Length: 105
Image (tube, rainbow, N blue to C red; front, top):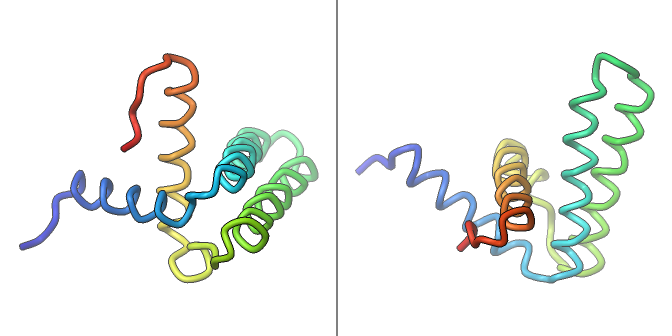
């Protein structure tokens, strides 16, 4: 049976969280995706700042994986998963921090 978008999204978010269990890796990834979101916002304003923020995104993410999690980033195998599940996690985590409510499993 084919999964609905909602089922697939939940599964991909769960898979993403499984690869990011270490609290220091999670912290690094939170800031990595903050840098990535800021990079998208600055894309047409200053390409140099966008480039610096994009590099910071990868540096923080890869340190989290290689140093703390001891696994390979999803973006190596499944770039789309790393992009949309990572941003989904980032925005849901931000909502949790702002509201104090739990959104992530």
